Image (cartoon, rainbow, N blue to C red; front, side, top):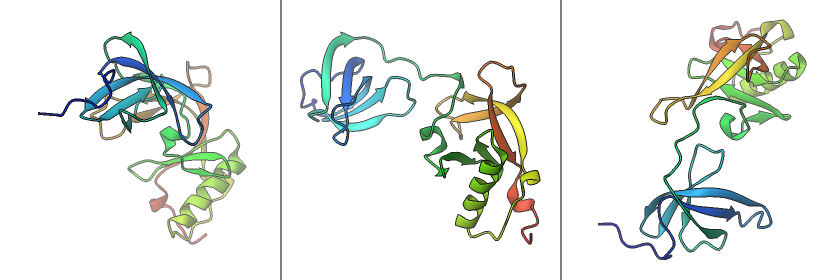
Length: 180
């Protein structure tokens, strides 16, 4: 049986505000999604992952509002650095898909190629892509259910599709001739 929370207001569904010890003046709203003894899982509004914090953490302010824990956001979204696991090269967000495909979240082909080349070098591959190796695409990112293997998918789209973003795409680089 889990022990009682240390803080008397720590309860699932309670609204909170959260300030990081690194940025104490920046306050984010959120909700407690789980109480495990003196540890809380807190989901900040607009996020899909939880923070684990101690119930007595000085950066949490407990609010009087209590309700059901909101469902995770689903459907189309605009990706952020956190959604790309903070993988960036010179400010260009880059994701490597499970099948080896690369996605550079930039409309600029030169920036995309530079980011992809930096990523490939970091992986120890002797590859030097050219601008014509990557494909400019428009895509819609969509959240998947939390139990999915990958948290989001990418669907190719037209430029005028709702929530579409421009990006550059490189199909499985492992199949590419790396002797260039």
